[in-house]
Image (cartoon, rainbow, N blue to C red):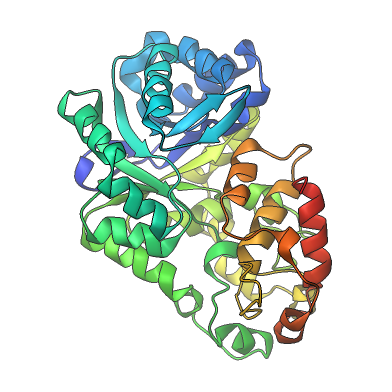
Amino acid sequence: MKYRRLGKTDLMVSEIGFGGEWMERHNAQEVEEVIRTCEEEGINILDCWMAEPNVRTNIGKAIHNTRDKWYIQGHIGSTWQNGQYVRTRDMEKVVPAFEDLLERLQTDYIDLGMIHFVDSMKEYDEIVTGPFLQYVKELKETGRIQHIGMSSHNPAVAARAVREGLIENLLFSINPAFDLMSSGDDILDRMFGEHVEMNQRIDPARAELYRLCEENDVGITVMKGYGGGRLFDAKRSPFGIALTPVQCIHYILTRPAVASVMAGYDTPEHVRDAVAYETATDEEKDFASVLAKAPLHRYGNECTYCGHCRPCPVNIDIAMVNKYYDLASMQEEVPESIRAHYMALDVHASACIQCRSCESRCPFGVPVAERMQKTAELFGE
């Protein structure tokens, strides 16, 4: 296992990490098996955003005797209310939820205290001007968290947190499907076969975020690295071609400021599939030539989250709605995290008026109106 410095925190973290989300659907023994495998493979950083009590307890039991081997990325603002996960800034809920996290993980501190899931400027403003940020700072002053971080899917919000010096590390969603299909004309260049360098095809807002993180020494840990498994399935991939875990990980680890990929695991074998990156050949890591050979006709009817469909007359963020639909539909049940991300959008798919003006602008022939209906049904609107 190779280790990377996580920005100004100076923590040396394994470049393959452990995103604990899938542990919610496993019992204590299965959680123990995955964590022991992570430790055997040299993984030393885990992310626990989940508020569900059992998964916190099971992870805590599994790392109790090896706590000193782990850097824990724990979230502030992720709560469990009436039997379900709720993201909140209500301090009457936030404080006991963080105390619960410490108690169930059987630790008296969290290495990386993450301001949980900030995707809008309005919410960012509320956090920095209200009691939430003050509480986070007090946690650091008292040693209950060692460093302040934030999780986000919005490059503009994340970039603002970096510029303003709010955070020491960032948990951000990165994979080829999220990055490479930007809202610029490079997509059309790609469709018509003109040569475009890989780095020129990254969404400008995301490229700027990565540059800012590197410039300000803010280390990035990565979520959604596999696109919910969509990138492993040629039929579901927006590229019309399947990538491997190794190729996805290599793409992520070649982005500026990235220190660790918080991959999700269901089994010890999934851990080994990710760690195989450490001994993979250059050919096995190569994602660029694979994407370059992707059949252009396969882009048809598959959303690439490019944004050419904008504007929407009712202000639906169509690309983001489609992204959450794709992530959710890859699973047997809609993950609570994806449901919460979707519900946090200002406008939901059910608001679609079926005007189909977006479809006339889509370069890939995506039946947007139909997908809005399916999304509303999937999320129970």
